[in-house]
Image 1: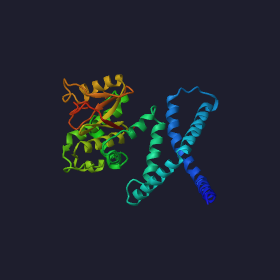
Image 2 (image 1 turned 180 degrees about the vertical axis):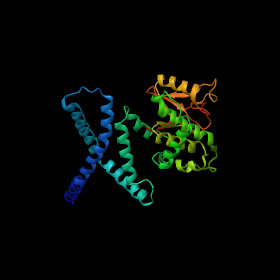
Image 3 (image 1 turned 90 degrees about the horizontal axis):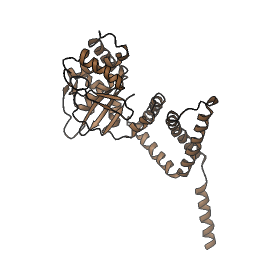
Length: 310
């Protein structure tokens, strides 16, 4: 009787050890999806020795594939369980019209496109992982590709600072400042419902130019991005506000002159410009709804999180 039990146990064990072909296919596909963004990060941060036919990069990519494959196979059971659970979530999201398969595909394509065109691709991943209140809703609400947002931004550039000459290198920033002037001169602060965050889309806020700080930030970021600017949203304690990428210290000096002597002379008279310098040395200028000129005073200096839209 004891021997029979042992034989049965061994048979059951062997059944569990049988590897199904679809397991390997799923693991390999996941490997490729992970390896591509990691390769972009490593490629951008390593010095390129310029070997013939970029053989060093080919070897690097193949080595990453092998290492990731070993790790994934080692964690096979946990990973497969997580994938199955994630698929159920996506099926549910697709069914109710929320975040589903199409959203995942679009997000992955967007990240790859942005990373491939960014000298610091790891920042894109970090920005995605950093905590930010209502992050997904805010990202979806920044409808910079919507024609209504684009048309509004173009209208603002035609209405303000159209005749500024001699600063072709800063044309985009000047036009973004025109968007800032149009939005902030019309913005009406309205609180959210009690005990609930209401996230209005950019096109929704465009109807009445009203809402709270996150609604203002969403409209500002969408409009700026729609005409080629680079905005980001800053999360502080109980507040969200937009900033715009100015560039280097030299760019700041030129923009400072523009603001104080040409664009916002009265508003910025004898006042200080407020901005942040990120870990790359890039300068971001405050565009909060309380500011009368770009670089107006911060409501809060503290930065708890940032969303950048390159």
